[in-house]
Length: 242
Image: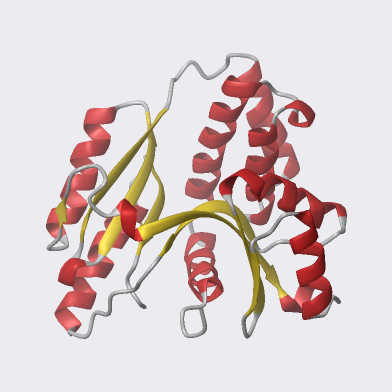
């Protein structure tokens, strides 16, 4: 994966999102609410909730904010029912884009996502039109500056816990897992005291598409910015080689 370090993109997103902590915490609050309603408020008995809590901590969400979100969902204080909807489409030069939303209004979400594609010169497609170009994987990123382990030690720990691969990038270790093994690997790292810059199940492109024209790049950024500003949008995956 050299030349396509996912950590660089994650760091870019995180720096961008630091200015929008309120939006990030709202998004995570929704994920916590969905996890609690699906499996209960006790993280010990709810693997999905444990994963969301780890994701929240990686995004610097305070513990008391996490606890309030769990109690609110458990107490029925939030009667809004969110549903996950996935949209797929194309950006400039056929860049593949997947948009995951968590919304209480499917019609509003669809209109907003379609608007983002249109304004950026792209177009929404049918379900499955680009998802076959991605692999669903657990991805855990560890900043090398935050750990004392060398590459061999990190690889041994992760592989023994069930990871598929450990890649050593310039700034980070990037650990990939199957979606089913993600929680076990994440928890093994957590129990070993290893801080994670990012830990989530994500969509990794099989191939990447380059944009060389200034106008194409401008349009692609337009799509991403509009989606980023949409409160319903939880995740955006694409195969643009930035």
